[in-house]
Length: 265
Image (tube, rainbow, N blue to C red; front, side, top):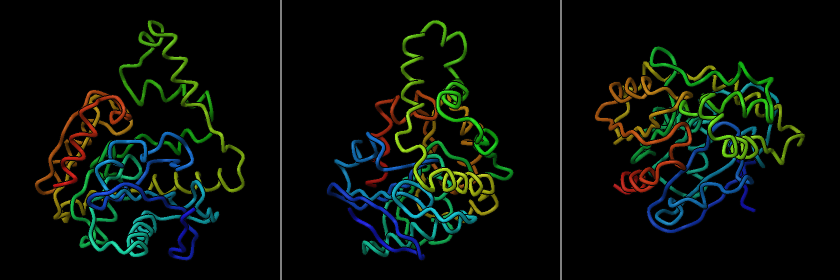
């Protein structure tokens, strides 16, 4: 089990595949123990793929102290140091896209190409859905609340017309085999605190590497209008739309193919 001490914490990471180096930064609550994960995706077939449990999550240390987005970005840079990668392609998904923004702004020399998937800049550019406001919801209640938000097509009419599929999605989204694990709730809470403070909007025009903004047309978490603002703010950024909601990478078969092609340059 690969582990590394980075910035005073013990981090769990995994690496697989062959090809150009690619750092994957996961979203809210990301835990590499939850299957299938990114290593089951097409990215693992096209790249030397590196992913990790961020501070407060999974098998990484979970100190019950405030976390900052700068710390998350510096953790990613420290992991690159640990594996000996000077410059890499980076993909950040959802919360991971927020971390990736901080990474490229704080350590611009480390990022060769960047994909920001279903994410937001915060500030005047718009924030993603405020998960910290629904932290009291867990399990099935949370899954049912978020279903029509994560994919705006899945409203009450869709749920009624697709009852079997709806219940299957709820069952999958409700599952948390690691609930109750020591430090899990505290680490998740600290991540949501940092997420709520995320704001790179005024600095986005400093990003100089090639950027692809990948977005779902029906995403109610990272809103389409926010994607358009980010694309206009980041010099030369390309915006591509996919047929899906917040999980468009699993819903639109073209997404992984096009993202991989962009990252490979």
